[in-house]
Length: 131
Image (tube, rainbow, N blue to C red; front, side):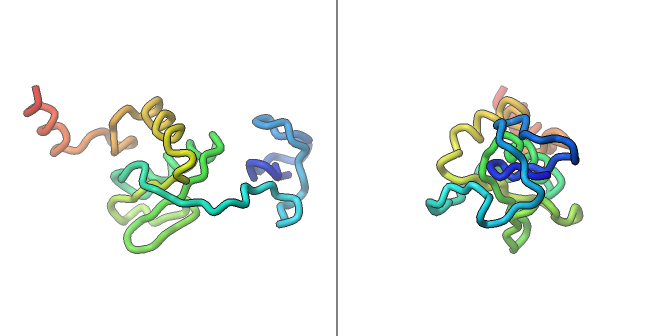
């Protein structure tokens, strides 16, 4: 079962989306999915340490109805299914959601750009130099 508003998937037996109260449908189609038809313009939120970290940030943002995408290496990926072997990934959000996305990111991770592993050595040295 799927929510036509937030597009989340739920187990059979659940009739309404717990996030927005919308009646669930068996599958998403162009006819039953609610979209903001204005064009999305993605802007950078954070460059995180790895695609796995980007996937975690992506999931948190999507769960909070933030339109988001991930760019890793040279390819755009509008899915969190990225290789965990490449380094760095850019989390993008629709510019209309930027302020809320920044607030969410900071509430979960502060200024940490490596949410799974903590700060890098260079970031630690920079912080120590500032003290």
